[in-house]
Every structure is written in C-alpha cells, then in structure tokens.
Image 1 (spheres, rainbow, N blue to C red):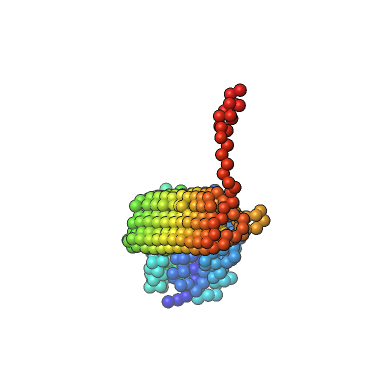
Image 2: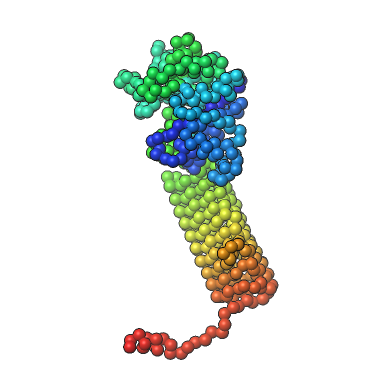
Length: 476
C-alpha cells in the first residue's frame, strides 16, 4: 500500500460557535473534537500527521503538540502529548484549497496519497476511511471524495453528477435552486494522489461567493483534465456531522454518549437510565456493575466489577476496584478506592486520596491527599487532609485534621486501631499511636503514644440556676 499522509484542517474561526476557544478544542462527549479525528487517523498508521492551524493557533498547538501544556489540560491530551503532529500555519484563512496548499513545503515531494480530514468532524470511523482508501487505490484515482445522501442537506456542498459520474461539487452559497435540491452532499473528506495535487492547487481561482480558494473546485479542474475522480458513498450521513454551532456540538456529544453506553451495556454493565448517564470515551467499567441515573464518569476513570454507583455521582480520573459502592451525590477526583469500600452519600474525595479495602467514608466527609487504611471508618461530617490513617481506625463525627498553618501544609498520622472521638481537632504535624484513644471534643497538639488516652477539656462544671437568672434579666 502506498504511503498515507494525513492532513487535518483546524484553522477556521468557527464564528457560529460564538466562543473564545478554538472550535476544534470544544469538547464532544468529554474530549476535544479534534482528538477524535487524530485518534481515527492513528488507526490508519499514516506516514505523517499534519494539522493546519490559523485562528488562535497557539492554543491548538499547545493543546496538541506540547506535552507540558497538554498536561495542564488534563485527560487524554496529557497522556498523549501529541508530539508526533506537525503544524502548518494558514494566515490569513483563504479557504480549504489555500489551507492544503500551505502543506506543500512538507508534502509536495512525498510519495503516496494525502487524506484530508476536518478537525470539526469527530464522528468519522476508521473503518469508513479504510474503505475509502481501498476504493481510491483500486480505481487508481487522482482524487476520491467521501459523499453521503442526506434528506437535510442544508449547509453542505452538493455533489453534481453527469451520467452517474461525479463531475463537480457546488458550495451551497453558489448553488442554483435546482442544485440545492440535490441530496448527495460533500463530506469535506478527500483522498488525493500527491503527484498532481499541488500544481492543480496553484491553479485554483476565487470566483465564488466567499472569494476563497475552494478545494471542491479542484474536482471540476481534475475532470476538465480527464483525471480519474471517484465518489465513495457513505451509508449514513451521521458520521460526517460537522460541528459549526453549539447545538451541533450537543448533538455530536449525544451520539458519543449513546455509543459508549451501548458498548458498556453489551459488555455486561447495567445502566439504569442511559439518557442521563454521561460516560466519557476513555472510561473503563467492569461487568456486573450497576450505574444509577444521573451519573458522570469522566477522564480516565476505571471502575471494577460488581460495583454500584448511585444517583448524582460524579467521578473524574479515579480508580474503583471491585465491589465498591458509591452512594448518592458524591464527587471523586483523582481518588483510588480499594475493593469493597463504601463511599457517601454526599462525600467529597479530592486528588491523591486513597481508601483501603472495606473502608467506609460517609456523610459529608472530605478527603484530600489522605490515605484511609483497610477497614477504617470516617462516617460523618469530617475533614481529613494530608493524613495517613492506618487500618481499623474509627474517626468520629466532626473530626478535623488542622493541616494548614497559614503558610505550609503538615501531615497527620493515625496508626492502626486508633479511636478518634467526635468533634476532635488534630493539629498537625501530629502522630496518634497504635491503638490510642482521643477523647471527644479534644484539641490535640502533641503526639499521642500507642495505647494512651488523650483528652484536652477541663473538668465539667455545672452552674445551678443559671437559666432562670438569665431569663429573669431579660424580663426586667
């Protein structure tokens, strides 16, 4: 098979999006739309990948090409870094033909073919492109255009055929009333043999409503020169949905979510209400897991087998091992939960929190950079930050690790088997020894030895008659 070079157009402003963000970085189902295009291209094993940028080019370049900047964005971009992508700048933006011509210094002397994709068409499948490539080479074509029949062709260029053969492509703004009735549309996806391409691109003119160099004009030019042009008809137009507005962005996200949910359900995951369940493409969920309505699973979250995630839960970049239960309305971000652990309801686990096997984190408990050991419990109204908590520890309601002195964070260590009474303040840095007890209402500023009891409150004193005297003063 001849060499394949992929070029992705990502220079446009996306005016209808009404956004300060480059259009191709808007998220579809949790990922930037151009990330889908790049992943599809990866499956074709191309010789090179080139992205044509223009509007807000540095934002796109940093998001896809610089590992440190990608890491700041998080998610899949951070993992990939996209250092394998070459960028070409098109300034000013003068049409798709001009955009492709800007790749000449990189690709004009290359051999093989160029697959042209759009950064705002995220639903296209690799299998579709593979068939396009096969048809192109079987026909020994100079150009092959991916087309589809759409009952609502508004906004797309129309495919004009003569004697059944593709003769030209007419942009909607330049189409006659009769041509606008044509249902076969141009996807904007092309495969070109490199040899005649760039000379032909230099011959394009701007005789159109936009005054731009239209790539579709190349098809008519090829026909006039009797070059072989093919049209590869796509079975469904859904794959070539281009995103030019917020409503189209939402529609594409709906398709991505539906596809992901169907895949998981086919693999043995119960999703009670797929319409309200948002699971991003890189999330993994084990079989026999039950997901209740209104759940969001994001980033690179991994959920084990036989877990149960109740309604209103949001989980980001976290790991749930087998048999984990997440009760209603919890938020987890960057957490790791051991097998059989139970979280919530209304718990918040912040990054670098680890919960051991069979441990419990309950109502209105917040963990931050904290390890809670196997079998330990923090069931009520508690903040545990920068803490290492051993196994079989009971943390009473209202406990606070006072980890911040106004300048630095400090560590709290609670060893195995310790018991922390309710309404306790542990002023870090501090260590509670193995099997030690801390009395309710204590403020602990010094280490507690193993097996010791720590209390800080003085002896209780009752003042008889105080209430009646106070009421009497108010009535005077």
